[in-house]
Structures are given as C-alpha cells and as structure tokens.
Length: 363
Image (tube, rainbow, N blue to C red; front, side, top):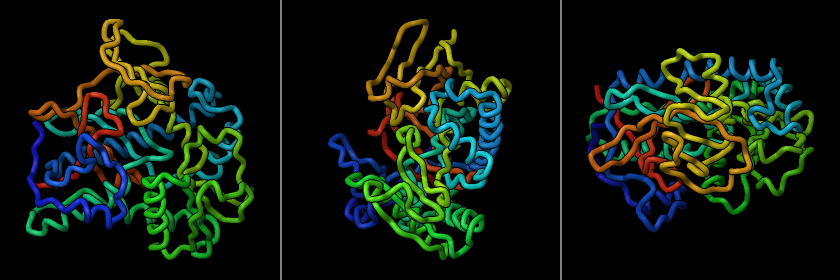
C-alpha cells in the first residue's frame, strides 16, 4: 500500500488567492489539501532515472519517424510535416517542458510509461507551486519535495533565449480567452521567463497575428489543432512543432518497436494485441475515448470528442491502489531533465475529475 502523511490543510480561499480558481467540482475538491503521498529518496531517484531514459528514447523515436516518413501512422496532419522537420533540425533545444505520466514507482510496483504530455501539459501550477506552498505551510513537517520545476523551466527559458538575442530576446505568451486554467498556466510560465530577466508580453491567442514580430512565442494550444498555421519566419514556437511527434500516442508503438526490452515500456501496437489492453486515441486527452479490453470484450470505456483520431493499443497495467481503491499515477515534469513530480488520484481511468496530490520525500 502507498504511504501517506497527514498535513494541515491550507484554505480554499488561499488557493484561490494564488490563482487556483477552476475545478469547482460538485463531487469534491480537485486538490487534496490535507494529505501528502510519502516517497523515499530511492523512489525519487528511480522516477528521475526512468524519465531521463524515456526522454532519450523519444528523441530516437522521433528521428526514426522522420527518417522513415511515418507521420501518417502517428496521425500527424500533412500540412505540419514541413514545420516538424524544420523544427527538428533547427530547434532541437527549444523543447521547454513536458510531463511524463507513469504507473508504479511506489509500493514496489515497477515504473511503466503510460504516455508523454509533451506539447501542452497541465498540472504545472499544482506541481510547481501549490504543493510547495502546502509544504511550506506545514513548516514543522520534516521532509523535502522533488520539485525543481520552477527553477528548471526558468533556466531553460534563458538557454532558449541564448539561441537568438540572449537577454534581448522577446517572448510572447498566449492562451485561449475564457479558459482560466490555461491563462494561469501561461502567466506562470511568463513569470518564469521574467525571473530569467527576459522580455515578455501576454496576449490572448485570438488577438495574435501569425506575422507578429517576436523571437519566441509560447502558445498553450495543441499543435494538432493548428494544421494550417505558419508563424512569422523570425518567430520560434514554444513548444516546437516536433513535440507533436512526442505528443502522439502512436509514439508508444514506435518506442516498443525500437526498445522492446526496456523495463519502462508496455507492449504497444497500431493493431489490437492479445494481452488485456487499453485502446487510446492518438491525441486523446483527460481520459476521454478510452477502452479497456480483455479477451476481446470492452470491460470499461469513456466517451469523448477524440474518436476521429487513429487508435493505438497499449498493454494494460494496474495502477497502485490504496485501501479505498483509489488509483495513483505519477506525473514527472521534464525540462532538460526530470525536475519534479506530482500525483493524480482517481478512478481506474484517470480523467479531469481526478484529484491532484502532493508528495513529501522521507529518507
């Protein structure tokens, strides 16, 4: 069983003052405010090792897709292929951040890759700021967190800036108007860039023009929904277009083909497999359009808006469970290396109603 630590809960009002004003769910709070999941230093090291090795596999997988023209297999819009190839060749070091979703890692369960949210990952505020503030609020609690997310991304912004005009590089940050969670996430990223002494501006995506004169443009909007987009030639996009390869769940099948003996990979294929499996859509999100299939029968499924995308089939794995049958999934952030972790708690198919849980590291 996973281990937990009871903590003094910060108030909902305090969370809202920090900018956490969404997820007013009628069936409970989104952030678990009175409990941390307890990790050991060895478990953290295992998550770090797995994440860094998986990222290296994704780099090799993307190269394999590009060299063998496998974009269609990953459901990549043909109109984005040129941008993907350009960014892979010229902007390889501009991947700002992503989040690996992993099963296992606690309660002696082996770590397995579930998917990589490489383009527009959520849980940034919760993982980098909120769980840190919860730990700071419990100042008598002995322990640390694996949470270098804020500093890692801020440093990454500076490295990216050096590829153009250094501290004189200009950064535009954009989200869709009316979606508070995305605006807060983008504003947080903007603050990370500001803390690196960079020149920044925020504008809603609807206000932006494709030929705006900025050195870098971070847009919290999925690449797969921008098939006809062409940025100004002097503007580098963050995250780069090639991260759409990483975002596609079709990469799970590519990685398993290239690294079948990796301890971190589940058997995955573009066709149904014999084992109990999870059928996912290439660009599905938040647990939508998921089927769990055993012996040819669908035993659990979710609806959604992503059923027009191609499917990939991944071997089923049990998530760690507690005594109340809650399931736990680790989310490890990557920015030039594994830099922090948070957890989701919820049902067997984790969706946008699952809860965020912070952690503490005990020796």
